[in-house]
Length: 350
DNA sequence: CAAACGTGGGA
DNA sequence: TTCCCAAGTTT
Image (cartoon, rainbow, N blue to C red; front, side, top):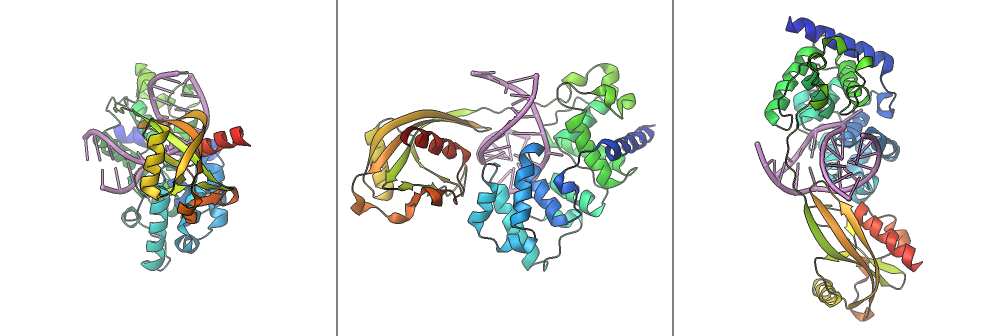
């Protein structure tokens, strides 16, 4: 009985995908390296956002050897604005492993793929099925939603326990279909038809099997109870100029690691800022102008940046390496928050 | 398990 | 404005 439902659902989704699936850049290739890059970029990131990043990345670094040998700064620059920058670190680390330990041969099994840095259960399943035709169901936001609705399950999809249970259902279904088309069909169905709000049940290939539709629970599924409390941080952020150069520093750890930004301290007074900056860099500066307040929102915190312009007072104390011309800044990976800061600064002062 | 980790779009 | 959430992984 259940197996019959799995079989019909799997076949319907696969057939629907072959007729209505989206034409996406990473679907025009069988190259596992390219598919890998796309899947990493697509983690928690929408398709339309990924497209230009994917095209540029593949154009710039067309092979895993290119990535392994690339300058790290260049990889972060390719990732600038995409977010979750650890993905870029992991990508390069994994590329080196493939080149050095696997002699450039791309891993071809779920277990081997899972060993790559940045490749978890979702990504390993996605690459295994799409690039190598391995029948492993993908568990992501889309497929969790579809399974919850199709089988009217009220399990909390924020829990790993639920992801494992739904993953087993996906694995049971995928046996009745071609793995690549089934998995991509499930994800397209979630993105195009079985959407979080306003689902198009009238056009759904599994509507006749859908238990939440029968129970009229579609709109309140899936259950997703996760608590995210957001902290608010206030900063003074200063664009410090010295002639035609501006001070920027690379984050060494934590949030926005590896990305460059302007000097930023959690203090209230210009004098405090000037002292903090001197203590850290040995450069005497003075805040000269208020620019604006800028808000930047992350998933788990919010920055309120009070932006000022500043200048180096005593050039004798200035170490040149931390000051960059505008054309040099264009080559650095800069966080979106601080690109907003730069834009506001230039708007006022140029 | 829960928390950390970005950004943008839609309602 | 505010909230949700989007092709998740690591620690």
